[in-house]
Image (tube, rainbow, N blue to C red; front, side, top):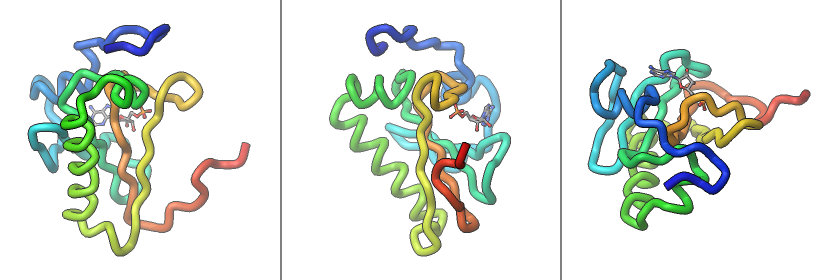
Length: 126
Ligand code: AMP
């Protein structure tokens, strides 16, 4: 369900199409709740995107409207993917952009998983 004041979920967004396997992606994980694939324009040696299977525009939408099962399934999938990639010891960063100020480009919730080198400051200085 869309957050009040924000546009409704757009079924034609690129991650919806990847989720439906209409367009290819380098998929590394899939279960009932989540799908993960490599970012097409990686910003770190490891840059994976994890999306929920449900139709959620953003973190705002997901946190407000997803069921407890969807939330638990998605969060556990993110943790499992990072663990299975061997990222727990060296460490990793999770990031999810929501809305205009964040620069969110694709209107389907996605968590960026970055790793593979020291990642520096969390938010660049202006
Ligand atoms: P955001 O700015 O948080 O919405 O991030 C969108 C991300 O999706 C960017 O890092 C893009 O490089 C990535 N992206 C866009 N299209 C694709 C695609 N077809 N396959 C994989 N990653 C994509």
